[in-house]
Every structure is written in C-alpha cells, then in structure tokens.
Amino acid sequence: MKSQNKNIDQIGVLAKEASKDLAKIPFSQKNDALKAMAAFILEDNKYILEANKIDLENAKLKKMPESFIDRLMLNEDRIESIANTLKEIESFEDPVGKIIDSWERPNGLNISRVSTPLGVIGIIYESRPNVTADAGALCLKSGNASILRGGSDSINSSIAIHDSLLKGLRHADINENAIQIIKDTDRNIVKKMLQGINKTIDVIVPRGGKNLVSEIEKEAKVPVFAHLEGICHIYIDKEAEPRKAIEICINAKMRRPGICGAVETILVHENITTTFFLELVKSLLSEGCEIRGCKKSRALSEDIIDAKEEDWSTEYLAPIVSIKIVDNYEAAFKHIEKYSSGHTESIITENINLAKKFQQNLDSAILMHNASTQFADGGEFGLGGEIGISTGKFHARGPVGINQLTSFKYTVSGDGHIRK
Image (cartoon, rainbow, N blue to C red):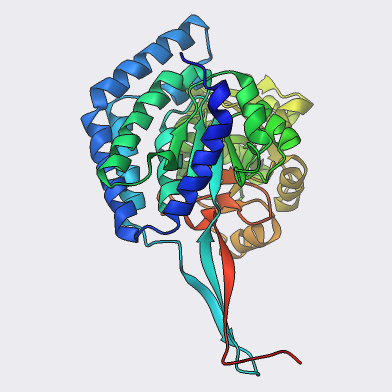
C-alpha cells in the first residue's frame, strides 16, 4: 500500500479548499451526488464484497473476537443498507443556510442566526467499513469536507466503498477532495490529524472502542465529538409488562451485542423476582447470553456467574450481561448515576409518571421508555444515519446527524445604523 505520509499536509489543504467549494454549491448538486453514490454502492457490490473478504480473512488469521468480526463483516443486505442510508440522507432538507432564529431590536436592527457548515471534519474509525459511506455522505450533505481514516483491519473495504463515493462526486461535478480517505495505516497519521493538520481540520469524530476514543480525547488539539463507552442500562420496574420486558431485553443485548447501544446491565425490581426473573434468565441463556449477577440474583439461579465490581462498569460488546436486583426505583437510579457512561438508559414500566421521572432526572444523552437501547442510532431517530454518538454537552449530544454537523453565524441588517 502506497504511503501517504508525505502528502498528509496537502490532504489537509485540499480538504480546506474543498470545504469552501461545498459551502457555495446548490443543494440539488449535493443531492445529485448522494443519489449517484447510492447507485454506485449497489453497482459495485461485488467489488466491495471482494475487498471485505480480504479484511475478514486477515481478521480471522489474527483471531479477532466475534464482536469485531461482526462489525467488520459486509454482506448484500448490509451493502443495501448502506445505499438506503445514502438515499435517506439525500431526502433530508438542506441543513445549511437555515434561519434558526431571527428578531428585531428596539433600534430597528434585524438580526438572524443562520446555520453554516463546520468546515473540515476528520473521522477516525476502526472496524466498521460502513462508516466510510455514512460519514462521507453526512459531511457532504451538511456542506463539510471530510478526511476519513479507517482502521487497518477494514482498510480494503473502506477504500472500495470510498471509490464508489468518488464516482458519485464526479457524477455531480463536485470537487473530489470533498471526501478524502487516508490509505496509509501508519498511526503517526492519526497524530497528525489530532494536531489539526496545520489548522485545516475543524472537528475530529472518533468511531471505535474505549482505547481509541480515550487516546483521541487526550491528544486532540481540535474539538472532538465522542463518547468514551456505551455502558447502557435497562431498569425493569415492578409495574413492567413481563413479556414486553423480556423481548426488549433480548433485543437490547442480543440483536447486535457489539454495538455501543447494546445493554450491558439490567436492573430488576425485587418485587417481580418470583414471577418474572427466572423467565428473563432462561430467555437470555437460551439466546446464548452469559449472565453475571449480584448475590440476590445468584441465589435465584445457579446459571448466573458471580458479578465482580468491575462488571458494573464494563462495556462487554459481547453476548454477556450483568444483572442486579434492586430494592426500588431509587436504588436503580443511584446505580445508573454511579456507573453509567452517559450514553443510553431505558426504563420498562407501565407507570407513565415514573417513566417521566426517569427521563427527567437522569442526565444521559438518550433516555428511553419501553424501548430497546439498540434504537440509540441516528438512522432510527430519523436523522439519516449518524457520524457518531456524542455524550458531551457542548454543541452536539446524542446521535450526531446532519444538523449537528453545522455551526451558525449572525447576519445583521440595518438602515444607516450607527452606535452612539
């Protein structure tokens, strides 16, 4: 693979120039590109799958865990899903140039707050090749140039998908440097990006595990949209409907155990342990889920492994879940406050007032009622996919979609106004 070390500064400069072009092009031109990208992704299906096969074989030789393999794997359904996400992003209104608010001052000045692109966004990600398309398309739609740096384990898949995106840019006569991918897997490239590539990168978005995100947040010299971990909780209240609760828990853990929205800890009200708990345990075990539990839960089932203190703060990203029986809602609330990473929590109850209390009093980015934590996703929120989940409280929080990839400026109109 040809090194790009000597060209990294140029990549930044070209991205900055492309971002200026993107800020001026018509909305319809961006949509033409996105529509073409979706078509080329489907047309290049075989080429992308062949590239992904190389990455999968290499990952298996390295004996990477199953959760990693699942995130890396592409198939026809997942490629179609990538294309559908591009189509959905195309269908959204232009997030740039929106008048967010406007008002008139007593002196007659008219002031408006108008949405603008952020500029150049650097995306650093690991094993999910679909991020190449999602991130590139979301940045394009929001008028931002992007510099993509995928992990070495998904490099062939990411390059193949990027080739399809370039075809879409060419089709719509858009500067090809609007979406650039770094093919060099040297980690020094990441350090250069975190330093902003000579002030050409405006924002960094990491997509990956705790170690990657922690390193980026520690070393970045530019703003970062990120979450460190997805330690998500479900609290099953005494007024929960049993069948509903079991189906939600199974889905939240086992649909895709390796994603950040998978539930890691389930808290169960002690009043329903005799009527509900064993059925929940049986259902999880039948799906191949390992259960680590507190002393009370282990007294009810010998199939539950002893949970250590670190289990309550562990993002398993695997078919493993920790379970704790709690005395009441207050105990569940305190547990979540102590161990949550601020990503996503869900309460299962038919008590509407309690659900409202749960959503009002907890401070995670996403708070759900009677729903699987796996809905913590920009596409499921109707945002047209996401570039990541942010648990920070500045600028963007929760799924980062096209509207979160904009800033704003003020426009002021007067009629010969001067300030005394």
